[in-house]
Amino acid sequence: LRERQTELREEELVKREQAVQELESFFKEAQRKRYTDTAEQLEAMRRHYQKSLDAAGAPKESKPRPVPIKEKPVYPPGAAAATPPPKPVAAMPAAAAAQKQALPQHPEPKRHGHRIKFGILAAVIVSGLWALQQWHLGSGRDHVIPFSHPSALVWEGKTLWAADWEEQTLFKMKLSGGQLVEDARYSMPESHAAGMAVAEGDIYISDSWQHTLQKWRISKGRILLEKTWPSPGPNPAALFFDGMHLWSADLTERRLYRHLIDDALTILDSYPIDHAAVGLFADKERFWSADGDNRIVFRHRWDRRLTPIRSLMLPELESGKSPLSAFTMRGKSIWLGRDGSDVLLERPIWRFEEHSLEPARP
Image (tube, rainbow, N blue to C red; front, side, top):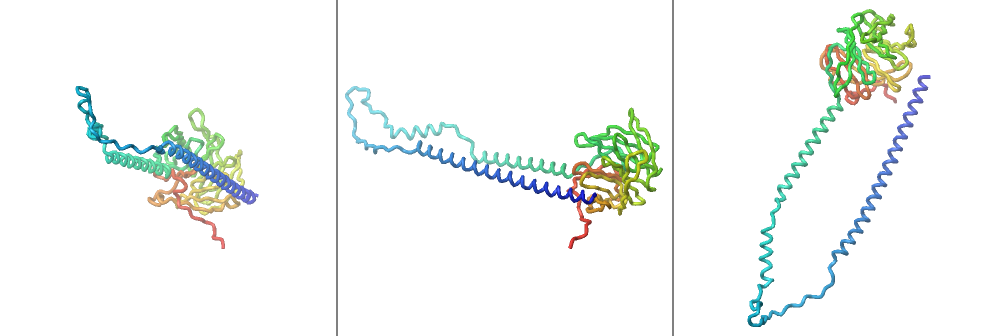
């Protein structure tokens, strides 16, 4: 039934991709047609205005100017015009020169050009810095936390729950200005949290020292232990709630268990895996687990064996000896914690090196 559901899901995804491609093609064609129509309208307007300008600026037909006869005029004696006025032809160039000198001088175009070049250069620099900042933010963040031995991470809406196995404390944090800020902390001196899940208002903890699974509830600012069950294996670790069932992992047996949330935490299924899972995550389309010793994240197929199909490696995790101790996901980012480090890593999936684990098809 699950395999058939997986096939139907894959077919549905293919149909969605085809529909998206057809929709993109439709919008591209509509946009191209709109650009073509706009260009044609602009060209028609250009021709119309060009005709108007040509008609307005066309020279009118005129008769050739008659050549004046250069004869000395005769003035009556004692007339005011006895002295001929200055010749306008000789006076006009000098007046024009004087007016030209009196006109205000504009700045040299070279200086204006330098200002334009400087403005363009400044804009390019600012754009480059902004793009670099956006790339840096999009490539992940480092979040400083008030503890250094994270053993579990769980996102519940905008709240991040984290457990520290050494301090035996549960932390409640929120994002503020892109950084994690502590909102509350709850001491659990009776528990050594190796895994955690938040389900329907309750907090489930796996205690690797007492070999138990525990149910806790927060009331009036305090965290109270409500119920305890023996763990399926001798070394319980990661927990995860998928919205219906509780998942648990055992490091010694290297096995995953799917529990019904009831009074007995009834085991519905178990799945063998090839690594010690310190973190689990799942949604409708994918199942993930984190290998603490090798610092690798695995993606599994939803089938009867939870077959691993991809391995994701982050190069920066190869440095140092601290193992991977906590893992979760939020959106398209992976959140990681390392034992002994007071920094949580938030990295987008594209930062990881992916390797296929499926056998090559002939």
